[in-house]
Image (cartoon, rainbow, N blue to C red):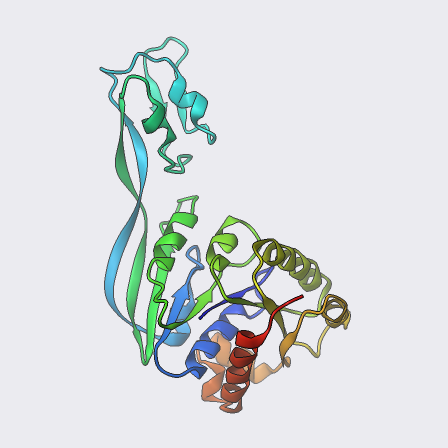
Length: 281
């Protein structure tokens, strides 16, 4: 069972939900932090890191002695990562634009292109109590988190209960993070921004055909438009978390709310049981 925790926008409490959900479940639990541009689940779960593994993407290396500067590589590159100088004296590779698709290597008529690995990030694995912990970290200055997210998801154990903490938003990193989930929990807040980005996130999950439900954080602030939207679209509201200064204080210290409010453990267990049984219409 893979349950992803996502949000259309940042700051809704996504990591709070994901970490406390993982802590509420029994044995054989995995936690994957796929927010590789800013992973912070380790602050709450405090894992003991046992292994680190570098993540690479293949980028082209041009053998200028074989190249006849035909420009085929530049034509097939959708990301403009290769350029042939007009005087046909050199082929330039812009590694930060390269997505590592391998098209240029495959289609080079002169077989003048090989691939070399470029380090873009790192995977950390370890244990946080009974939880197997995996997170990814994109190197500073790198522009493509998706390969690191794919590397993190390569650790998914189909025999475990897996909680995936997704990056915020609705772009490619989110799509890669939620892909393959049995259920997605969307964390939102009762504000115009929260509603707008929730609608975008729901549209993505519908296209991916992933069942989903909503948690409204700080539900006693703002307005009731998120509730009305969920009711009109038959989206189950799985939990409502109040605006509580003590919860905010615990979060700021990196302390799971279960340590101060043990009653939330049953709430998160019920949420998980509901997630395994819900199917959106």
